[in-house]
Length: 466
Image (tube, one colour):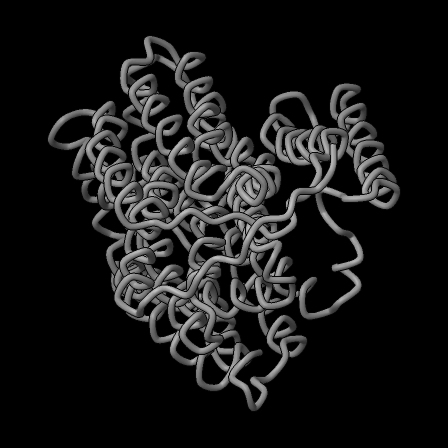
C-alpha cells in the first residue's frame, strides 16, 4: 500500500473556524463525560447487577483501555480516509454502544458494551483535535482554541460525577447512558453542516503489528493493576503478566524502530519537550481519575452519601477546571506553556497534600477546598500540555499528533482508576479513608512532576509559536 497525497485545505473564515471548534467540543464533551460519569454510579450499578467493586472497575476501565489502545490508529485512519468521515463514524459507533450499555442485562454485557463505546470514542478524541488544529492556522488563535477545547474536555470529566449523580437520583443508573443519544444526533447533524472535509496531504501506511502490540502493552499493564489484589502480586499469574507486558513493550519498540511508517515515531521521544508533554498528560489524568474514584468510594461507602450528594461535592472541581482552562489557553497563546504548567503543578500538589490525612470524619471545610485546588490545577494543565505536544509534530500528521496526547491522557485515566481500586481493594467502609491516603500522596506527586514538565517546556518565540 502506498501513501496518498491530497490537496491542502483552504483557510476558513473566523466565524466558520470557531463554529467548527464548537462542534468538535460537543463530541469531546461526550468522550470526557463518559470517562467519569460512571464513577459516581458504581455502587448503584453494583446493586442493580449484583456485583462487587472488582468487577465494577472493569466497567470503567474497559472504556478507557480500548480508547487508549486505538487512539493513534484512529488518528492515522482519519488522516487517510478523511477526518470528518471518521469523526461521524465514531459518533455512530459511540451512540449505538451507549444504547447497548443502557439495556445491558449483566455486568459482562455492560463491560463489553463499554469496550465498544471506547472504539467509537477513539474516533472522536484525536480527530476532533486534529480538525481544530487544521482549521486554526494562526499559532495564537490555535492556542486559544485548544484552551477552549481543553476547557470543555476538562469540564466534561469534572462534571461527570455531578451529572451522573443527578441522573441516577432521578432516573436510575441506566440513564447515564441514555443521555448520550440526543447529543450524538445533534453532533452528527452539526458536523455534516459545518465541519469541512480534510485529510493529511500524505496519509500514513497502516501499522497493524504496532497497533496490536500497543494494545497488549496498555491492556496487560493496567489489567494486572486491577486484578493484582485478587490474584496476588507475586502469584504465578501476576509474574506471567509482568513478563508478558515487558516482552510486548520490547517487541513494540523493536517493531516501531524497524517499520517504514510506524504507528508511533519513537524518535519523537528523543525531544524533551514532546516527551515531557506526554508524561505530563499521564500524570495529570492519573491525579484526576484517582481523585474522582477515591472521592466516590469514600463519600458513598464511608460517609453514606447518596450518588447525587457525592457528585455535588465535586462541583468545586468542575468550577475550577471550567474557569481556569480557557485562562490557561489564553496564557499559552500570550506567554507560552511554562507559567500555566507551574500553576497547574502548584494547585494539584496543594490539593493532594490537603487529603493525605483523610479520615472518616474529615470536615467539608477541608474536602471542598481540596477538590477546588485539584480542579484549578487540572484546568491549567490541559492546554499547555496539549499545545506543546501538538506543536512538536508536523502539521500534516495532526491526527496522529492529537492521538498521542489523547492516548497518554486515557492511559493515565485507566492507570489512575486501577491504582485507586488496588489501594482500597478489600477495605471495610471504616478503613477506606486510611487505605486511600497513599493515593492522595500520589496525586500530590503528580502535581510536583508538572514542575519538571514546565522546566522542559519551551518559551514562546517572537512569532507566537511555542
